[in-house]
Length: 497
Image (cartoon, rainbow, N blue to C red; front, side, top):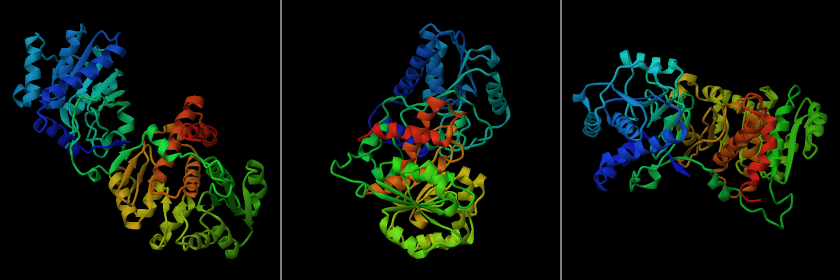
């Protein structure tokens, strides 16, 4: 599991490494530059001309150190200092003097004349809008079509939010030295960072309260602790029973996708409560499901009996926003003992009756995409994109729910003050039905586990891994939600069986 460092936490770690542990910042700078130099030597042997763009801060020092190392290794490399010598930080100034001692001086050549560009203009400390000549330079870099390697972070990207500060370099490789930062994953981070590398350069983690690091990212190695060994003496009743309340007169696919995902997760039994018109369709597409149906009106006694039977409930996929759907949602949320996943149309109904969220409850997982979150909170999409972490965490705290805020990087905020930024998944998953599969996974895992606090985060991560495998097999453009159901077994089998 990776800790995700905010701008201030990363700066604190860097400073303490130098001040407390007596490792000079120049040593860290050299290690950072060496990690990028090794990558270039392994992957860009045909790059005959390389340009290192250096700002006046320590990020510029990284770029100048890289220029010197590449020069010493025989590369045809140049650098451009973006600022005055008098503005250089102490460490960057020493790197600049070192370049001069090699006879290398700053040049003003056209970026299109180079095969590879290294961005060392601004690091994570940027806290202003990029304008004027630097904005024009960044525009030229992006228009050049040349590959760009960003050191620390693409210049212009906010390290905490992923917002673009006026203008931003678009990189194909980003070296975020040692630590992930939120902005690499949020907002425009995934658009402008390319592949993210986390080379170890010797920064010592601050010896602070682990609770301060409340933002985390799961890794494949973490799955073994979540996908525990199945009880060899278990049966379909002991492996968890899931009630899926989904579908309407016009919609049946969402019920099929979510219910299948719940069963594939390892649950023993899945019952679908849906409109009678869906019985044949769902029964044909998913014969393993138990089906209970209603016609013009639903029966509260039937619902109560099914909820007493179930270990978890999923409500919402394809159920519509009718008065009947609202009645069913209100009834289900009145049960304070069952873990419940609230998805899709149920979320839209909640936005009309937010007081329902204040009902006493067991574990609730809400899975809104950004549009549904905007309706739930009354905030604009633009505001939510700019303040994703804060808004997700505030919502989880206020309503004591696990909030899965779906976007290019899905954020799972837990009421216990932990937040997970998902690093799995890809753009091919932006397709109809993908969210139904995730909701079913959440409900399936809830039904199987006694300790459910981090279930939502693991479900999101596994869902993304299935998407990555599906993309490798089908391609991102051609993927559909059903492909996730085909790849999930392989992901789940990679843990314990």
